[in-house]
Image (cartoon, rainbow, N blue to C red):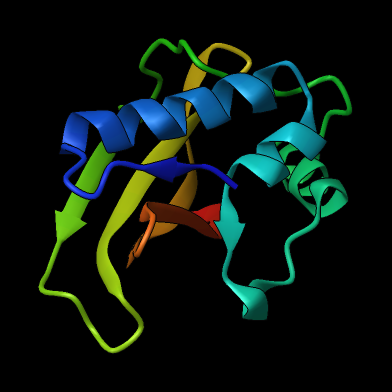
Length: 130
């Protein structure tokens, strides 16, 4: 799990998730899993992350996340929503629509941003169709 500076900008948070998506593109699900923390209730594993991507839409074993994507019937959204720190230390959420095989999709990864003593921690919350 990586930490970001306490005062990371929205742009830096999006770049962090783009780096996560690059690991997904190389199908290094172990490294993508290790880059972030995780919401425990979601029970993410590298295998589950892979299964969600492969089961999307056409359910092709060859499909994968790509960093770059052309708009399709949807446009890619990369958005950070911030709020005052809550009782869990959360200060923001990142919504990042994933490109699949070079096309924008409605498969969205969401992340919680938590303030810690060592900086900001990005936690994978969910990957699902929005």
